[in-house]
Length: 152
Image (cartoon, rainbow, N blue to C red):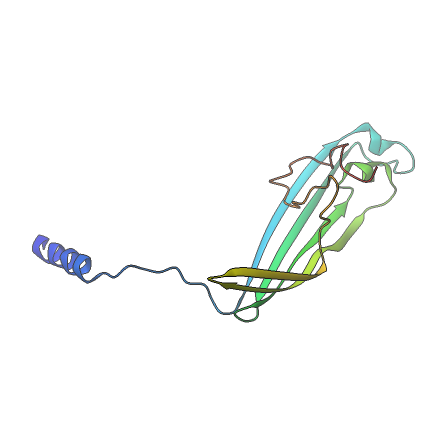
């Protein structure tokens, strides 16, 4: 038994060629971030909410990516969350769920030995100001945006 295993290992080592990384020519990828929370706050008992001091919520962000060909792709970020989930919704009336598109882009990229070019068109994140560019709750684990985020 041992000689057979050793023979297979030797044949594999001698016949092995270096493996090169490959990227698919087309395909679909869907990543997601799911988070949930339980909140105990007296804010939710005051008007206009006038609800229970304990409430729960969820948030999910989906990141679809569709590679159409060698140079073209479509990417996005879509958010779904319950109300209340964010701090400001603890003091508003009602319950429910909402969804919104955070990003949606059509992309063209080309890489050569002389350089590369990447063009994106669609609904993009801002490139200016102090804004959280990550929608992932694991990367930005606060229940609300920090006070320094936003327009001034």
